[in-house]
Image 1 (spheres, helix red, strand yellow):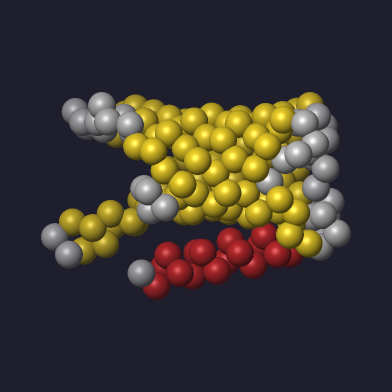
Image 2 (cartoon, one colour):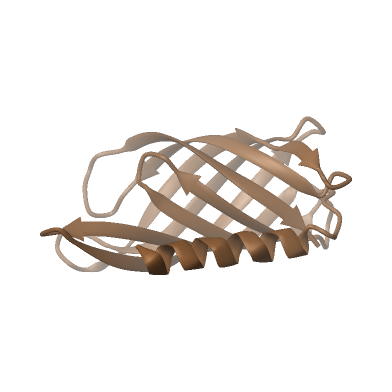
Length: 156
């Protein structure tokens, strides 16, 4: 929808502005990331902070579009995440939890376990591309979903 396209463009613009800073995965570093999950069709934005070298905690925002009877309903959920960068090669493993509604209509948490890698794209090491593989466990069902995703991360 037009609203989702405007939001996506705003997030990308914000990410490019923030790319003027450095990304080193070191304690005290802030990051901003945007991503797309190809399985669940949700867009994600997050702000992260390295609490120690290689360990990032983040505040997540998931923007999903659900079609019901031909109409699009936009839904934004929040969540928390943690990611550990393994060594100097850019490999990482992470866990995300975000608010959701279970099959009974009660408040619950969706969970996702992910592994991926960070590869420098440019801007003097400030812009990173992050493809990932994830296992998503939605609160609304007992099924687990395997999926691929990708994102871009900037540090400041």
